[in-house]
Amino acid sequence: MDNVSLVRTARALILFLLVFAFTGCTSRKEPPAEAKGRVNATGAFVNYFGPVPPVDKGTCYGFVIYFPSAKEPGKVLPFPFFTFDEASIKKVALGKLLAGMGDQKAYQGELAQPFPAGSRVLDVSQSGGTVSVSFSKELGTMKPDPQAERAIVNAVVLTMRQFSGVTDVTIKVDGAYTAFNKLVAEADEKAVLPLTEPRLLGVVGMKEKGAAKVEEVDAFFDRPVDIKELSLSGADGKKIDGEIYQSVFDMAGVLKTRTPLSLQAGAPIKVHWKITDKLGRSASGDDDVALEIKEH
Image 1 (spheres, rainbow, N blue to C red):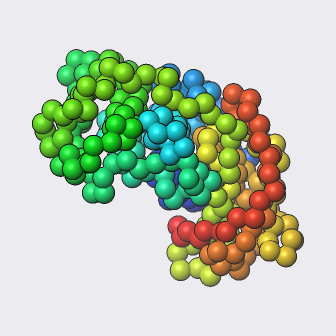
Image 2 (image 1 turned 90 degrees about the vertical axis):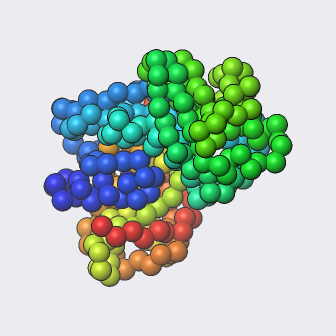
């Protein structure tokens, strides 16, 4: 795939999960070029999702964000994320935790959002092994709810504690210590729900800004996977013709169409897929997915 296509795929990934930067694609039909980049993954990432796939250049960081569960209050679900900016990694992780994953239909009804509306991360600092996180005043307006409070503490503490050198976490609101800290010592891996098989998150059609036709269709998954089978078809059942690539981080299957397509947002795309994640959990499906459209 040429450099222009590499950049385009990078932008698609950024738009979809807000955690990728300057990524590319590796053809499934050609042996991948020797990776020249470096990947650093937290122990939590490797534990839940296996080794991080290599990158072509730069230094990448793989980490986990623990989102509160809606089905089992107080518990959390791990999700994989990536960044090339180590300096801001903790604040990025907390910001995404507050933003939530409510837009992911594949997990609809499974993820809770216990943080009050308007909650923000004011500051993240570290002294020795202790990370201090200060949230905005909105967090202090919560009505007493032991399960919601425990979910917040488990999510924040487990997300922060995975990073090298972090042994303790302090939670503040508007700079002041809070009752949340009474629960910090109880936050451990027992709060993490076991992962099920990998899932298809959605399908995005990419086109040039202002262009009328889609030139690339990307199928996104919820973790790094090896794609065994992937085909995309229109509402008429006709298979979309093109080359299939696998994105860097192995989070998406990328179909580069042979000819640009006239597809509209919301159009049903039939997806046939068979995948295995890096720890051997397999899944397959034949799903009708509403197409999202993004511009480069």
